[in-house]
Length: 392
Image (cartoon, rainbow, N blue to C red; front, side):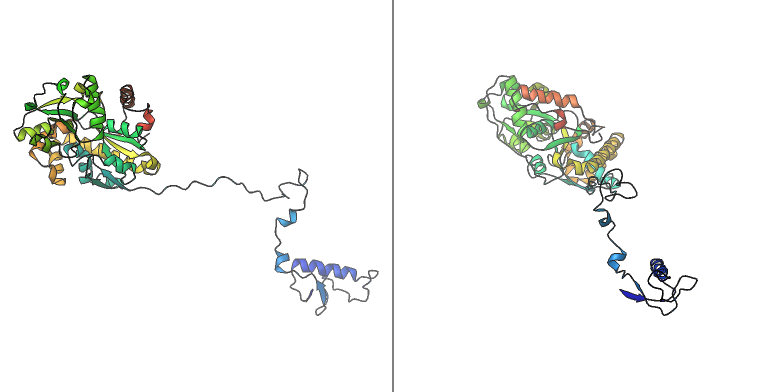
């Protein structure tokens, strides 16, 4: 207890002093105490005893006072709750940071079929959408999808048949855009090889550059003409298709771009015959697609959508300005400016897809069914696992 005097006592102290004054009246055992003034306060200098209000008592725990109360409607009311009325819900999800940088690996060395990417870069269509896009050429045509599956690049270019094979093998790849919506691959054979048609390939040597060239195109071609696989040789030529043909190390190649290799060989005096995928018995499919890693798609989807939108704008500009487009393409990537590529530009431009994001779902379903019927995949994969429209 501590002594307090003066006229500036707080309200609770004044109440205690009033009680002491009351007890001091006659008959309450304190008759000898001084009579308080009319205001109800003791004379100045009078010692009175008041409760010691320590900080702990002055600010008690608001919940502790109710711990002993009985629950129920008679007690647990809004004015006297038994516990604080706090609404507890799930934590807000942490939004992933925005992705503004994307690396894109080409399927081959720079080619006219990659025009939309290079023009979008040159005309700042990526930058205007807040993107930094890096275009890379592969060291080997077999590696882009493998690097994408290993999360070494953000996006990669490939062909629809290879996508089906990779997904069937458990790789987390998904199509997000189409740059060329028709097949580009062909069987190209030397005219002096004595091969008059696809049915005469037994005993020949056909090179290829990638997995789908051998596992889908060649397999379908041989099945259609009932030629056993062991009846011919098919070495992996990587990037050296033209070189192998020119030097006579192979009789032909499968998977070559139909409007490029024959022209390049003709410029060097080598006559060839070309057979399209229709002649191989392979259904129509997308010839050049952009694929993403499904496991990173949620975080990257907004950036991918912006990139694909830039590709659509670039393609529309190319169609409207074909001559300016070629000049810009050649200036941006000088390695493209060759006689073969200049001659192939109209054919390449005509095959570019005007709506890259749009998905032809039935085409993917039909091609997956074809692969399953041919025994080229282990199971039928739903289209939703193979391809998406990033705008949906």
